[in-house]
Length: 270
Image (tube, rainbow, N blue to C red; front, side, top):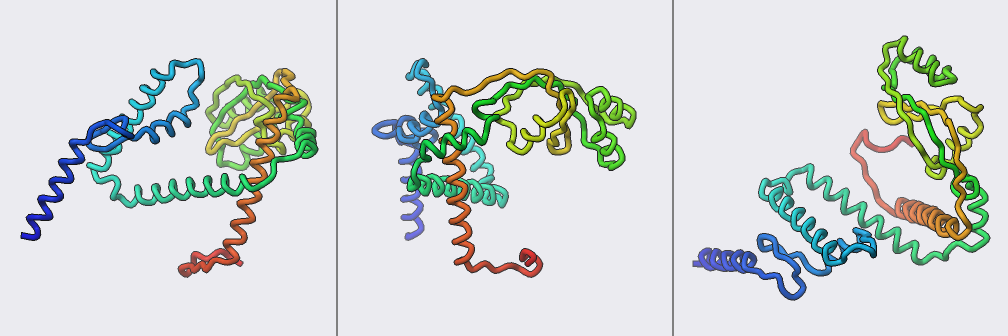
């Protein structure tokens, strides 16, 4: 009798879920699963919709995307993917990353904004982002990075794209040519310093996984930021640095207090 009662209650709950209607805080119900107005507003906030767009049409488009995502997620659960070890591992990683980003944001709120002096000093230290920002036109050769050290030595000795192409062709390394434009603002600081110190027309090589890209700057267009545009960029960069330092200090403190035990052979070397 007890099991019949439980079965009846379960059936009633399932039926209630399927009969849910889109009212109150619900903007849609997908196979009994609600999508609330707060969820929709959160998605709209992340979508960064331009003020010039029709808000009603944009809201409808975002909602349809949420419904599609919910339907596919429901199918994945029906296939048992939410019980797989891979899902559980990736879900934990995603949750941890979200919590860490929220922790960093909370800690950053307690710090003071950079002063005008700090901001000006940072701008002066990074001319490639601010006063001397440029747009570079590049000619490139993309190729698979050889495993043979001898070939790599010949590649590194090449001073021009034509010389590099000759080395690659002679050694049977497949390559392709391309053109690109890049802002000096996105080039890492140390790499920027090395590139601007090169003689005109000399190549620089950037590894990209199993590939490498050889580049030569064929023209430079000045694109400095005005003072009004530079300040928010500098403040954002300094805040990012502040956040990184805060989290670094927090992690050190947590490690000092934590009790961490390793299985034999997994502990870091002293």
